[in-house]
Length: 156
Image 1 (cartoon, one colour):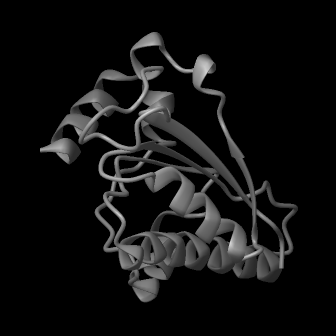
Image 2 (cartoon, one colour):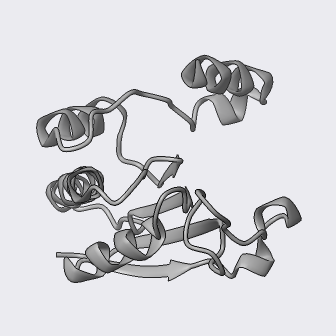
């Protein structure tokens, strides 16, 4: 359903935008599929994801980070072979703290890999409806409900 909505929104944009934006389903942790995606549609200027991390289960966060790393490293190798001056591999993730502090856990694990420069957007810079604090079931009380995390791949 989400993919259908994305494609409908894309068709509503200008023809120039249609050539720059693609939507594909990708199983996190499948590095071969990530490399195939890069071969078919890359190189990528920016990868955007939303609502991809749920709960405290480490394997899902690691699978997401493994996939982003595989895309970044494959693109790096593609650009080295093609000897192009390349733009950095950028990722923006919108994350909602739902059951625990998913943002803190993802940031910690991304930084431990030592391949990402990472920045979290200030919550006051988000739309007002996204500035609420987590409460009860939806994340740790007193922490922002939403966060936008920016990752920049550090060249090999």
